Length: 191
Image 1 (cartoon, rainbow, N blue to C red):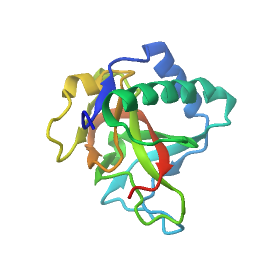
Image 2: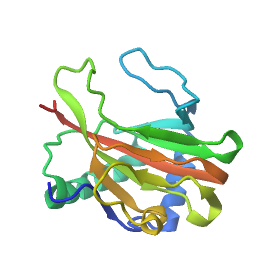
Image 3: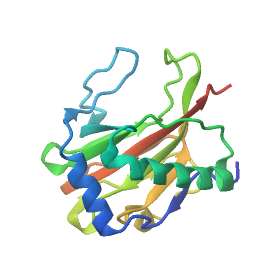
């Protein structure tokens, strides 16, 4: 591994980010849960957000899956060298100050999942909101040797990649609303 994280600053322009937001807001919303394998539950102490799932076969988002794959291959080649082989869905998240939206420290690998073949290997976060429309809500890496520049990560349209086993968080939104995408590229089980 040549790095713990990397990013494509302002990869998507404002118009594309607004299109993603508007199209995603048409999908069914639910409270974000934590857990896996039928043990998902609401945990407002750890996570407060609304989410919408976008499946890879949704024709309104084919371009987004294509771009995520292309940038993931580039990031993975240059920084991580992790075996990734699929991306089945992405998650659109809303963090609103009205309910103190946040997602406390966590990592993305479900080590004890029921899938005999796959683990989450590479995580991606797309910053969709204009950084001047909300306060707080910063995405942060935890316990890494280096941390990404806060200003760059907050830039609208930035795609941020990191191995899924690294701890990270989305801090509480103090005012306004933050929208983002999370994607998890899976590959053969970690060993």
